[in-house]
Amino acid sequence: MFDTVVIATDGSASAERAVTAALDIASRFDATAHALYVVDAGEIAGSPEAVREEFEQALATSGGRALTFVREAAQADAETASDGTEAVITAIREGDPAAEICAYAEDIDADVIATGTRGRHGEHGYLLGSVAEGVVRRSAIPVLTVRQIEAATKDH
Image (cartoon, rainbow, N blue to C red; front, side, top):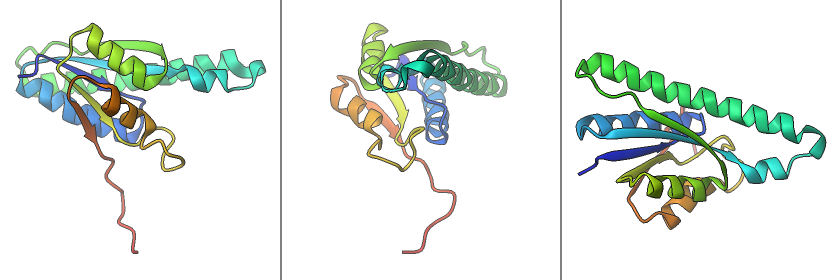
């Protein structure tokens, strides 16, 4: 059913839950897992020119850490399963995150995209995110959105 799983990550806690779910799917279906981090070109363009290059490098570094987390989680799963599971394939792209995630999934002929529903922008703003929502709206393939579980319940 699933041969190729794309894990869209930004390194947030919500994305970490999506990583766990996506790696589980990949393991259950013996699918290849691809982890993708997108450097948001809009964030870079909107930053002050004096710090733009440094900011872009910081985002790329953050992406590297996010992808390392996915690789390490996949390795831990493989060691637990001890079935010779292939290491996760990683990639970094730059552009509009939702568009790049969908384009990447199309490029590799993915069967499903997994993403968290709340990213680095947290509860501020509309970013349910806006990336997860954009992927759901644009994607021609199924999208698994994994909700961040609140650390503590709030009384209303």
